[in-house]
Length: 166
Ligand code: MN
Figure 1 (cartoon, rainbow, N blue to C red):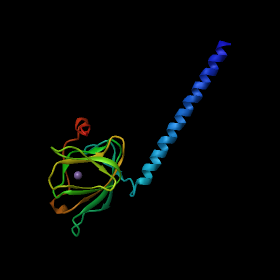
Figure 2: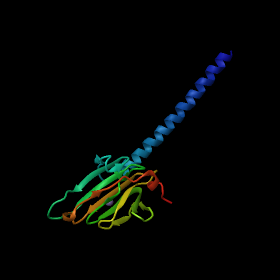
Figure 3: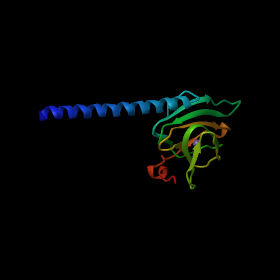
Figure 4: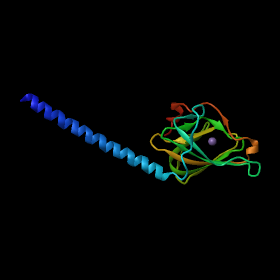
């Protein structure tokens, strides 16, 4: 008799566990679909671990040439992902099209970026940008005057630096 009761209890527990699992799967699929619907451009190619912490995907929109001397593209940062510290010899303009992220100039506090924000990174200033811990970031970038150079990569943004956002 006890064994039958235990079996019923086990079955109930397994059913409950399955229901919870299905609910969470449904939730994460909905979130993934919502993220995909936010995207204007294709995801692109994953950036190298030597320049990024976490997963960041780059999709080129305007390749560099001697007529425009400008590079335009889109980066999708997954939650928690960010660039290394770096400099652009002629500066950079960021346009946030979806999600939420962080931007920091060396020596200054981290600033939050949201959909619709436009951020200027001045020439030769050490900085980084990326997603916030619980949101992806869809970020267009424009690099002008590429005859001066495009990007100089530096050291990774440590967890301590990244988590310093207040
Ligand atoms: Mn930059």
